[in-house]
Amino acid sequence: MGEEGTEGTVHLLCLAASSGVPLFCRSSRGGAPARQQLPFSVIGSLNGVHMFGQNLEVQLSSAKTEDTTVVWKSFHDSITLIVLSSEEGTSELRLERLLQMVFGAMASYRLIDSFLGDSELIGDLTQCVDCVVPPEGSLLQEALSGFAEAAGTAFVSLVVSGRVVAATESWWRLGMPEAVLLPWLVGSLPPQAARDYPVYLPHGSPTVPHRLLTLTLLPGLELCLLCGPRPPLSQLDAQLLERWWQPLLDQLRACLPLGSRALPAGFPLHTDILGLLLLHLELKRCLFTVEPSGDQEPSSEQRRRLFRSFYTLVTATHFPPGEGYLLLRHHFHIMDEETGSANKQQSHDSARQAWLPHPHTPAPVLQRRGSQRRRRRRWSIGRRCREPATWCRGLRSQAQDGDWWPCSWGHGGCCCCCLLRAPRMGCGA
Image 1 (tube, rainbow, N blue to C red):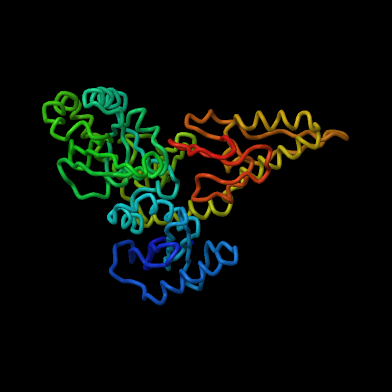
Image 2 (cartoon, one colour):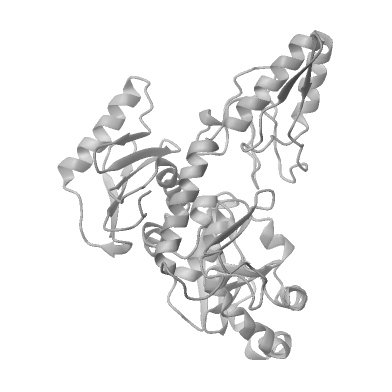
């Protein structure tokens, strides 16, 4: 298994989809930003072969040479992103998710460069928010809720080195990818006592900017507020901060080491554990650390690269995208054959009300008992979607930009989503 980010170069190209005109190019070498750029002839050739396939109704998504992996992805028929990586062990899955994150971070070169380099975070791969376990989380949560009410905004979080320590309920309800991008952006910016930063939310508000206010409580520990025109930054004065956070100064200091370790001191873990990744797929949160037991060999940088390579290998090999949706379609097909058309419509109607099973869900188990065959569903139906959504029995592999995809079965369905703002669809979804 190769070590991701070792003596390799990554080139990111952004071009206009219709004309092929380059908009920007970013590069990194060995995990650090680089000035090396690709010749214009190479850029034109990469875009040309992609456009040639589109003209023939062939979707070119990736290609490999002896030492380089190339991935193409178009967004909204407006721009095309191309990434080339010569890093050893780089997978197509990692590059595809890199392009998705880059598209959501188009307004910040610093944020884009942080995705190309070596990071202590893993949310770009897992598509979950990087979190930590604070030693006294209930006290911090109570203070955060009170501060949010006093400041006049419902979207407040406490962030240490790009990882969320605590957040309000409204902050946790932010859609993807902004829930991952906002803490990552804060962690990538240079230290400042306070900021008033304009941000666009790729799903929640792609055209109207919001304000991201940050206040440094301790070096590396920042208070983040997402708001509209109000409150002004001047309203968040020192007296307001002291009122809510001065009594918790010791608890805030205990959060500083969590930026690298993610777990509080004294957390019981076996000494042989060199790295840990905990994913909560329903809440879209993750905890990642390669420093659970202090300094050990190999170094934390090597462990992090190995862990990311191992995650992409396992995910791409054993849990390919769209697997869960294929299983669901297969299951309903079996049920239709056995129960007939009367129950067929009932199963379709009830399915529209349910969440899709996770792609990692195992297949239905078939057992023989005498001459009869018993089929059991092995997945569980998740909670209802809080946002506007429509269930669809189509394949997620046909999705456009990971948000909506066409229904391949008909039956009145047409598309699916779980977005803060769902556009109107012709089928009434």
